[in-house]
Image (cartoon, rainbow, N blue to C red; front, side):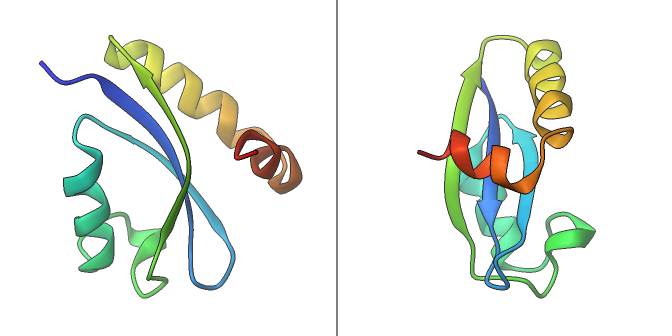
Length: 80
């Protein structure tokens, strides 16, 4: 089974989107095709600025929630 990945995308309009998946390449393709999350529709192309892998979905969901509570500047610091 694939690892779960928490990721942050930078959209073309410089906004950030955080999500989780167990297939990052497929998920980014979905975002690019406008079939991903409602928020990302029409905001591509995207640049992956952060990823973190987890063995369990629950851990990835917890980390996703933590990241979503951060400010934009704090999220950008993760990408460094």
